[in-house]
Length: 170
Image (cartoon, rainbow, N blue to C red; front, side, top):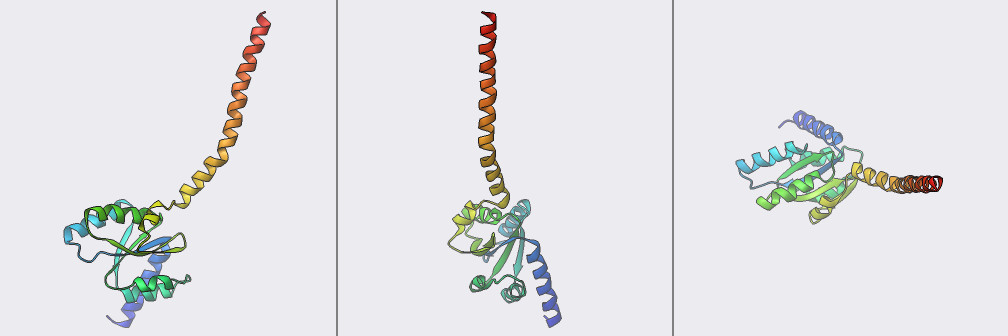
């Protein structure tokens, strides 16, 4: 491969990495054609982009980005498949689900919610809530006291109305 082609691939990788908020480095070596097709279908269904990349090209692409991805460089060994997603925990759930049926893919490392995770933290990644889920939880917590006050006022009004009606009839 010529230097110009490598430069173009690195630029393309940087563009793809910039388009997604989260990415996972996985090992898919040893999957046969049927398993690979099933993995790709599962990724497409979950809006996850799956790319098989050369480690040196990926490293150069990461080095060219604004964020310091040095904690991920040790994971760039052997075969590497890149799972890109805008939902932080979607690839982790897919890896866990797919891993129950097959020995691969195996998590090597991940960059999720502006943090780095290692291969031993798959369960943590599965349980991470996305930004939208956290916002929904906060809104639900903020609305809860207001709903309780409104409910109490409405039920008290009905009770008060009933008492006044009974007194008026007597």
